[in-house]
Length: 88
Image (cartoon, rainbow, N blue to C red; front, side, top):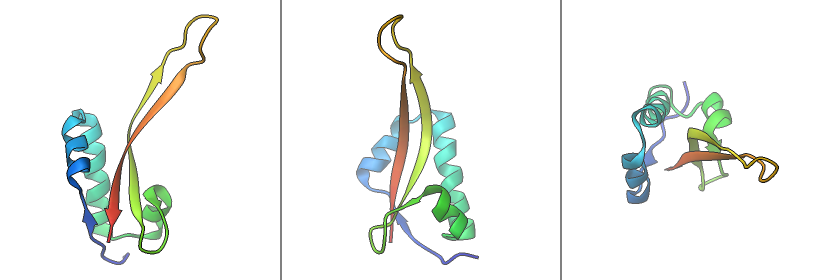
């Protein structure tokens, strides 16, 4: 079992969560539920953890969109969206 940790969802992150579609919201919920149940294990840190010492946070990817390029023009662009949750 990992050590118990607390996470804080800021107003900004809360507003981001309100804008998510159902599938993305489920991904965030599952990640937080796993963290709540298991604690901040090495596996969770490896998968979603970022930062060092007191500035640690989770980066949970919620969507990946491919923006098509133009024929003989722009290269397709991958747009990644994630939620950043600070840990204490």
